[in-house]
Image 1 (cartoon, rainbow, N blue to C red):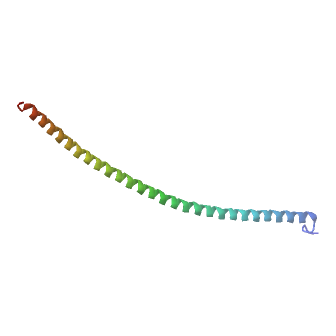
Image 2: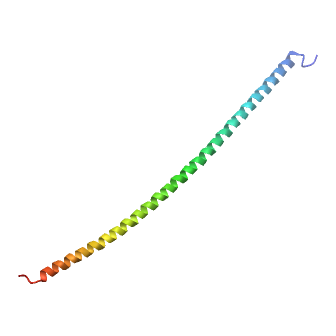
Image 3: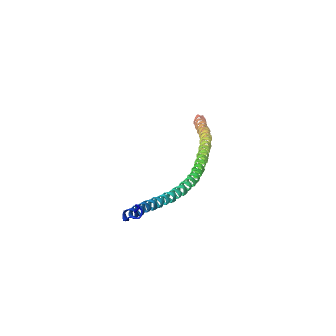
Length: 107
């Protein structure tokens, strides 16, 4: 009688079949999980590209805002300088007028 014909041989083959089936199922799950992970990685990479583009857009917008701010600041400084010159001339003219009216003979 061979070991395959004995009850122990049959049990042994059944155990080997179960082990192989479990290994095959495990391998299938691993493959499926790997496929899901690859899909997730692709999605993450796509999101990263989109995020990078958005960051670049924000950076460009901030640079434009900064440049516009500095341009407004320069224009305000120039306007302030011109205003200060005009006020200085006005104060000087008023001072000359007051001096001229005080030194003029009073009648």
